[in-house]
Length: 299
Image: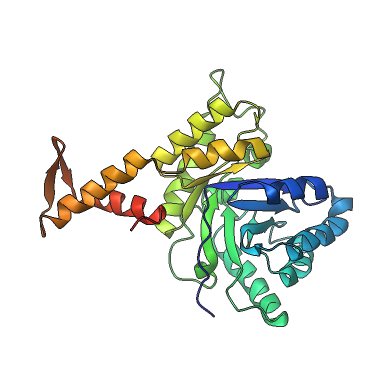
């Protein structure tokens, strides 16, 4: 297995149906960190063969394939194999695995990817994986299963969650209360994804906001979930990308404060607690500051 490639920025992941050249073109031309070409839910079964060819063509024509990812069909389906056989020769940056139900699914996908990389002269391990980890009832019990050392773990870089497929699996008629906020079951799914991703050492990615015209609400939500620990967010419309990127980009003030924390601890080697701007800060504050600077590429 070769060294894992450098990770792309993961603030914004913009979906585009794999059977629409126009929408895929808009996603690729957008400022989204990752253009997510979809072969699963947004493509009708009878259109999937044609969509695979269209997605392959879009990736092959790109000058920056690392930011072009593909949402494939679940690893338990025959469509998954057909998806991979069609797209891996084009060398996408990664695949987005829906309805994942634990580490065994990552390993299974890893073996498929390894065989196809070898067959197409692609460095082994080059194709990264992100997983949607709360879309079935069984998956909810497996969000902590992505921790540890197992075949394919080195490919896994992000975990996200979804409410629509989960509500369908549960037979639920609604996901949100009168205030527009998710009900308990879906907030639990969000939390389990965040905690599972943290334990696995990968990025937690917030799910979509279907109300794509309400950009103010989108940015408010994006900033809130970033404060909770999420590292990016899924998008379904190009207009959502800029607010998401803005919400997940540290401000100059945040970066300056993080540098001050790092410097305060550097000025007091071995200290467990330091004073800064009238507040007492301990080691967890240092870890958060260092992480913020690392994610921003700030030296």
